[in-house]
Length: 272
Ligand SMILES: Nc1ncnc2c1ncn2[C@@H]1O[C@H](COP(=O)(O)OP(=O)(O)OP(=O)(O)O)[C@@H](O)[C@H]1O
Image 1 (cartoon, rainbow, N blue to C red):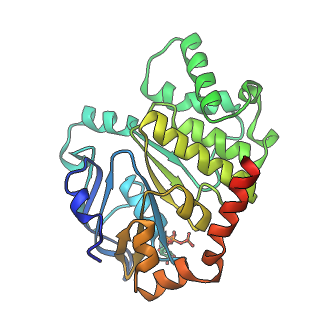
Image 2: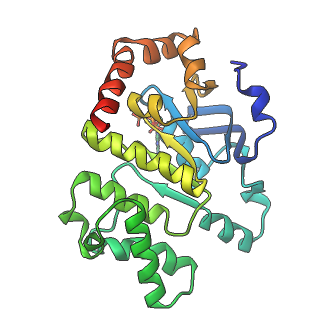
């Protein structure tokens, strides 16, 4: 769909650019000639039917899955043609929050956050401790969470701790795989607010795979819809609300979606 943001997008800095991406398993093609751009400072919500290939796309961009064709550029650098040191540098500029948090259960929150620091930076212990506690504070966890193990945390705290680890190296771009899944509505709303605050204060660019209509309505600057093995529709929420694509229509204007603005009014009045 040629959307209303196309013209503006031409002038924006691309943090991620995917062209002609094709990924498959055996004789099953999951993504076919897919194009996608993510622009600096935006929260891109990535949606699509279950099994459409959202996780496959994210994992391919992160080089966890091989691709059959296509070009992926992150921060204007092509992984395939850059040097080893450029690759290492690129890796430090990406953060990832996997669906279940994926924290190491045998490490404390502080040690989990310090893992990427140990891998990529040579810093004295005192500085790594200071940085870890800075990240802990940044994601709204109490300082004493640093010494806790993942099994001692609530679901919401695990998400925050995993986000703190994703932010450990001050990335430009973070990938969030269904960050609010499993959280209650209040916890999910608070997590959305945290993401929006980090975008505003750190200038973070966020690529968020989500099924959460609340997140799409409240924090996403742009939305991309995966359908027919490629990005079938992209644009602002306003574009989604006027789009004629059948799946987009039922997703964004179905019964559940229609109740969101009302819920948001209630949430805002409770916050006042
Ligand atoms: N490693 C793999 N080997 C074979 N097939 C796979 C593999 N990973 C994913 N698939 C298939 O690719 C398709 C897309 O899966 P994917 O997990 O990306 O969907 P999704 O859009 O993220 O779905 P959901 O919203 O339910 O999480 C599915 O049919 C899945 O079975």
